[in-house]
Length: 475
Image (cartoon, rainbow, N blue to C red; front, side):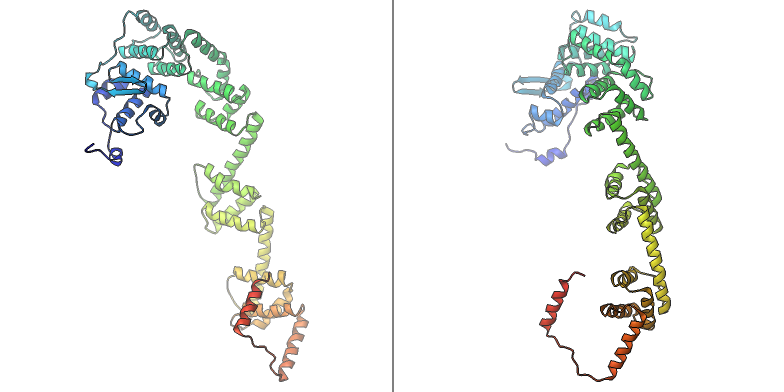
């Protein structure tokens, strides 16, 4: 081959569709056939591609190979393609201008059919509609009387002015299930009629007074025969659907089926919990000042995780309020604060309140220390950590700590000075102010007696070894 297009060139290109096809054939052609015809045009430009075969075309269009063959049979009857071979299946596209505008069907063959079907409608049947019916009968091998039964059933459901495309869609669906004879069509209609009263109850539960159409009847049978829901459960779920009709109901029942919830009790428990999650998500969003229309992601990412950690709903709302006051206006920001409370074991509203009260009481005592030190500054987490170490870890009394503050007054870094002094007192088991004064007096007396230095000197290697030992100690 001398020249060829690259794959990238072909993908970046376009597929031309003849205007004659668009104006004369596309309007009355079945959707499935149009899809196959246009995708086939695309493959014509990729004639050497491995994707240009029946099986891969069917996968690409989410269709069965038999449906592809049926579609090309439809176009072949109109003269737009020629079926070159059936095994392997091969098609050649023909110019639309040379094709017949419609396939000619025998007038004598369909004379009785035409008379019967015209009597069913309150409108004129145009040639295109007749040809659509003929094509369906011959493509799917319907018995003409069976097709008339389908038409009558569709008219009974939708009225005599029903669009023929609806009839065509029903006929194709039933043909796909092998319902092409009078006997099979009658069985199908009888099956649908048996559930008519039940469908009226479902429609009423959905707030609709219209009759269920064929698609809706098929859905109902799926729920009962495939999903195995009983009628009462279906009606109970329908009553929960505020809008969306059968499509919304189908989505809900499919979700319950996939989650193995088959009874009213299981579904109500699931929905009750789901409703609570939605209500909590809205309340938290409102508290921190954000709005999300879709809450499923919020519930999955944040709310469910927080609840699984043991947080009470009131506790989460309290944390959301704290976030708002601290100008944290995102759920990710709130998540950081939630995790801080979780690490401290604070998951209930009462435990958080107690913690905040302790912090408040602690802050009051720290402020008293600042007053003794004669300093003015905001209390920091380092100040709280220092106070917690002095009291909870070392067990020193507030009186002893205030006495130390008196001694630290005027120091360049008073808190650091207090840490040094209090650490020394803890090490020497000083527990009262009297003991602290006695220790100070002893040091004063000792300082008056000159002593030989007993301080040991260390080499760098010895210091490094000591530091290594310190890092191994758990404080």
